[in-house]
Structures are given as C-alpha cells and as structure tokens.
Amino acid sequence: MVARFFNQVAGTIGGVAGIALALVIPIGSLYWIWIAIKLGSFMMFVVGVIPPFFIVAAPMGAYMLLFGVPSWIINLFG
Image 1 (spheres, rainbow, N blue to C red):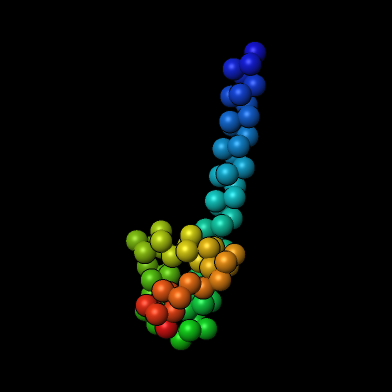
Image 2: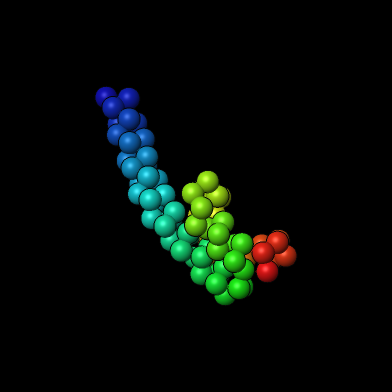
C-alpha cells in the first residue's frame, strides 16, 4: 500500500516535470531568438535555430528570461 502511494507520487511529480519542460523549451527558445534580435547578433540567432545547438539555447533562454542576460552572452554574441 505504501509502495503504491509513493509510485503514484513519483508518477505525478514526473508528469508535472514533463509538462513544465514541454512549456519551458519553446518559451526559452523564443526568448533566446528575441534577445538575439535585440542584440543584433546573427550568430546568436543561428545558434537558436539550428537543432544541435537548440539543446543549449532553449534552457539558456529560459534562464535568461528568469534571471536576465548573463554578461558572457553579451560578450560572446553582442
């Protein structure tokens, strides 16, 4: 009985995390592209569009949305 409860709780937490991730990835990607346009950086735009780099750009875009643009992004792409 206790194991079933913990299994259900773990499933619920996993479902909520999956939905959150499914929402954060597109929002982070769009914000990355928006910052690229604001900085006028074509290379940053390209990084946000090409699929292999998308894996890094989307979570970083979500981070930038919450905490602001890090100085290393501005130094690297700006």
